[in-house]
Image (cartoon, rainbow, N blue to C red; front, top):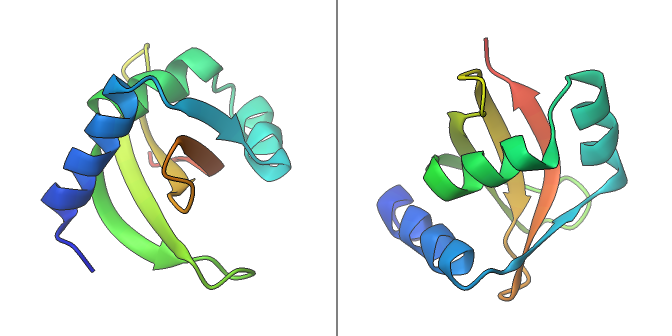
Length: 97
């Protein structure tokens, strides 16, 4: 597994390339429950850092845990499935307060 700084660099490359941001149904439900907007997620992905990795329970694939601040300064974590090299799939969003 690459270092967290290398994963953050890969995330920045995706953001700069205007990669599509996709959302799982679960992510959209959690965003609605936690009052998180698409703009908030975009800010986290643009300015946040990959702080860890995990394994997707269903697929066994890698997940990136991206932490940053939303437009109101609230600290959030977006969990990304990086398996598509041209898009960012948000699996869930967590309020880390």
